[in-house]
Every structure is written in structure tokens, then in C-alpha cells.
Length: 206
Image (cartoon, rainbow, N blue to C red):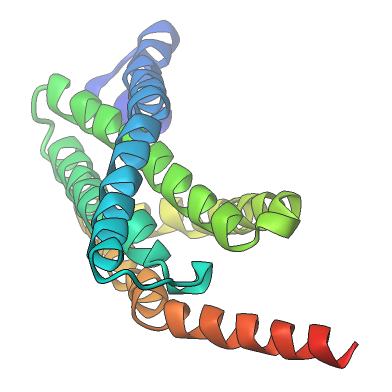
């Protein structure tokens, strides 16, 4: 990011450093606010679930709670905001729009990146509560691998096709990756029920 601001706007090293403040503030806002949003959304879904079955006097196991709905339904919102911020950053940098615009886009990117990470991390800890440390380590490993891979081709792509096209491609890749959370949303509830049933059978056999 710093080289882009230097090349397009002629910023000094100190000015370049100041441009990172927006991303840091966005990350801080995501850390402070997104957790509260997730908790409120979870309580809302849980209250709806309990009121539905309490009225019928029926009992449900934990595997039947719509955990994916409670944890993942905000993913498309933050993902789309992040895609838009990437596209905004790329094209405003390319056409040298007032520097405030790409800087604001880095704020949105920082906020949505941390928010997405919080959502996925919370969901993984919920479904792998007995192996929460391994779940946290796995998402950090995946994030680092994608970051390493991304940095290896982003600058060459920028040199070949330009900043705007490059960041549009990055946004498109991220949008396509939403198929992962969609699969979880659609099928993970059934997978958890099957796993719980197998666990009960194994306990009976023992």
C-alpha cells in the first residue's frame, strides 16, 4: 500500500506512515464493535429459537440450534462491504482521486477484515469448543498462507494490468469465496446432528 501512495501521490515516508492510521482505526473499531454486534445477534436468534419450542413444550438438543444462522448471517454484509472497499481503493488510487477517498477505503477494509475474522473465529470455537485452541490456530494459519500467497502476485499483477483491475480481481475472488460460508450455512447443521448421533452410539457401545 505504501508504494502505491508514494507512486501515485508522491508522499514522503512520514506521510505514508500516517495513511496506515485509518486502517488501524478501522481494525480497532471492528474489534470493539463487532463483538457486541455478534453477541446481540446471537441472543436474538437464541431467543427466537427458544420461544418457538417453549411454546410447543418440546425439547431440542444442542445440535438442533441454528448455530450457522446465529453466527454466519452477517458474513455476506461484511464481505460485500470489504469487496466494495477494495474496488474503491484500487480505482481511486489508479485515477489519483483525492487521497482522502482511498484512505477512507482502508478504514472500511480494516474494519471489515477484523469483523470477518471475529465472526469466523467465534463460529469455529463454537463448533469445536473442545478444541478451541486448534480452531484458532487453523484460522491464523490459513490467513497467513493466503496473505503470503497474495503478496507474491499482487504487485506483479498491478504492474501488468493496473491497480484498479488488480483490486477488482481480488474483490471478485473474495466474493466467490463466499461459497464456503454458504455451504456451512446450508449443510453444517445436518453434519453436526450426524456427528452427535455417532458420538452417542459410540458412548453406548463403550
